[in-house]
Amino acid sequence: MMMNNFALSRRLLLWLSTVSLGLMLAVPALAEVKVGIVDLQKILKTSVAGKAAQKKFETLRKEKEAQVVARETDLAKREKSLLAAREEIEKAAQETGGKPTEELKQKAMAFQEQVRKLEVDAKDFDKRKRKIVDELAAKEGELLKPIEDNIKAKIDAIAKERGLSLVLSRQVAVYVNEALDITAEVIKRCDGN
Image 1 (cartoon, one colour):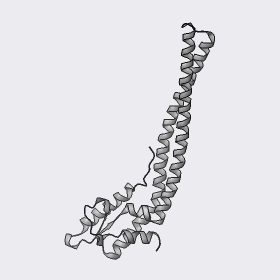
Image 2 (spheres, helix red, strand yellow):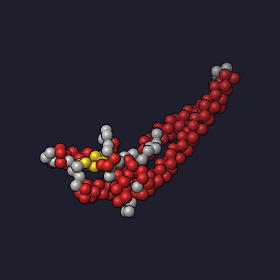
Image 3 (tube, one colour):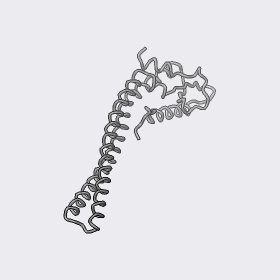
Image 4 (cartoon, one colour):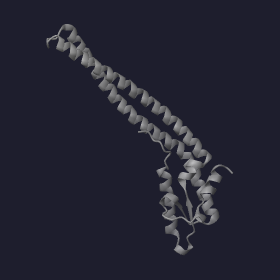
């Protein structure tokens, strides 16, 4: 249910693909293309900023997950209690030979009201769970945005310094010559070293 992985941002991957395609189309001859490769997931997982964002996100995720589990436990207890109450009402109805007493009618009405409240609370809980997932996705985007911007700037700078015409994400490359990989340099610059 909850997001366990600190996923690679689609915006950054789209940006890299767009920039790479644009650079490739702008180059007159493929022989002149100098290519760099970058592992964006590795940058997000190993850079200081990426680790900090992961930690913040994981703390928030655990907090939200604890809220969900607590509410699920409460709802399960209420459901179990209602099942026991139903059995008690059914047993009492059998003992009276199917003729409802005033007390039995009141218990049945109270039971029906509790069932209705549980159904409403369960629906509200489902809405809340969806909202939590949306909140987590938004928070993840909020945490990643400044990191993405910093990564983009570092990739741009390295590409210009090395005269690279094209920088591809490792995730879209089938084969990578490690000499083309600029990931370590990007991480080093993101970390300010």
